Image (cartoon, rainbow, N blue to C red):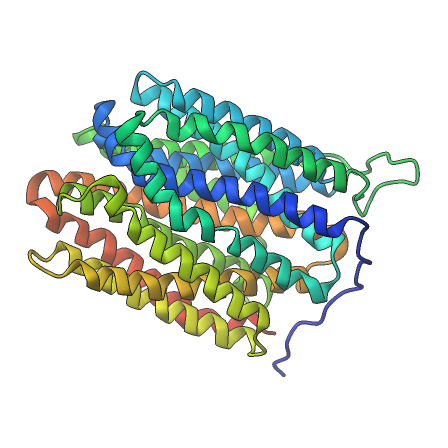
Length: 454
């Protein structure tokens, strides 16, 4: 018999929850601005550092190292107060911004991006665990909707500000300016969540249970595999084949044990929830990454103008999340509808490779995709909260984020390598291979969505 998941015991609201939400939303806003600004500016950055061949690597490497941060944060959050991995994550994120902003070569930039991924992976998992432990189930969807809404202001002004910064002050300030905002947001969260405990803490606050060193090692290997795949785009011949194929094998073998059993075959319940997060994220982000590049290099638009397509998607993402927060449809309905909208968006984005096609088609399509993923993300997050036992919330939340980043990095590394090779030989039509791959993923998400219920 098919049933919807039931919720476990509910935590009581904590004092200062409004201040806590403000701090969390502020940190999400910082991350949102950084993501949108870097996506808008990266074509200029890669050209300035003579690293267009590593364009996709600047994104996939960040996602790959975020997997390591997520696994570490999930383990620490189940054994210590979630504020601890949050603090470490913010520090690593800030150091990465500084390294990228001061980079004199694409190699140094990639190191900075790797640190950003490590840090953001840690603090994102910590924020989700805080939501699970500091808010009752009835409020969680609304808090997650606030997370998505935190993208609204950055999405409205982020690409424009990023374009202005790049053209007026230089691309370095796209990274350096973000550091100033992240620290106060982290301080607010620390002040309001210091006493949020781990489920398996003893009465005197000591942690119990050994750290999962095996998972740490697997996460590192998976990240290294994706990194090798990403770097393969800048090589030729046998070296490219060895890096991409070898990296793919390492990432797949090491990454699979990081996910719940049954994830790869989309077993009913939590495994399908985790699988869907990775599939949907890969379909959406492995498409979005190339949109500013196509618009700037093939349609000759300015960074600010090209970035408006990210604005459209981010605004409708927040809208879709708000609709989900107030809606009463079944999880399956939200997931199937959202996945269908993402498929429509990818088809619309693919029209950019057709000479003379109106760019408005891509804008309208990406608005649909943003609305779709806006409904999907909070739906999957709430399902994880409901399906996971309290002492497994950190690990399950980590698995959700790991699936997101690992699958996105894996697909982006593969498609980025293929696109880089094809564009060099056949021009703009080479992007079609990447769009075809992400479209197949979106259609797969439509098919397996009903399996989130038992």
